[in-house]
Image 1 (cartoon, one colour):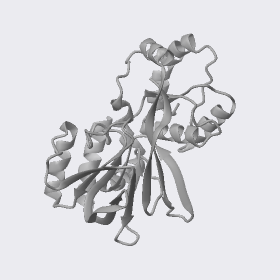
Image 2 (spheres, one colour; image 1 turned 90 degrees about the vertical axis):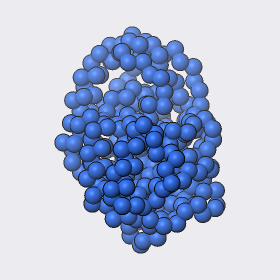
Image 3 (cartoon, rainbow, N blue to C red; image 1 turned 60 degrees about the horizontal axis):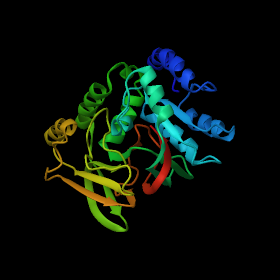
Image 4 (tube, one colour; image 1 turned 180 degrees about the vertical axis):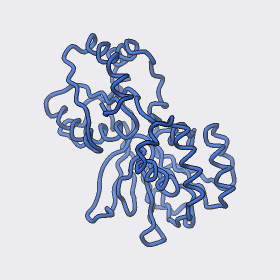
Length: 297
């Protein structure tokens, strides 16, 4: 579980409910960014037969990466949303009371959903390879995530409010980045973007329904490219996202594929995020791993 007051309040009741269904529960709490991946690998190595992430999208992403990079990558995963974003959880019908949540997890059969491997050259040298569960994106979204993560007090705001506020501020400051987007070896776009997203799930940014057609079990990535436009145009598109009213907008194009590469055309300008965290990449490649994650929920 991720730390913080919100998690602590929710955890008190959840722990009692989960303990009734899972008497041998082993609780580990994160105290630093990225620690959830290490704890997940540690739990899997100890013989744990189910790993439950309690937290937001960053925690979920780290736990998923920890499981998939462990010695037993088919260990089942579950989640209890408790954070500022929780967009991955929107893809599922989740119970909303402690005992109902515990019952749902305990009684759910194991099923398999797609997951994404992301790789590329690191900003600080070397290469990065990790996994994400929901959405990665490049452009203003990467700058928004960086700004939010550099302002811890922004977490006091609700997920949607927080993202909309920082999105508006980010758009005002944003200078469009130029990128090349290649899907399954074919260039689909080259030029300035507001945002280019690579999606497994359908939501990001605290409730922005950016890729409503995304399917966690179709073995494909959904790519949405929002071409650069004026700041007024960007703000107008932002307002459409919660209702998925942007899908027919002429500035957008949608694509599907198993592999996506996004590389900068402006040397040194590449702002990206994956599940609301900065992966530290200078360019990115995303590959779908069909049915790669065992899920109980």
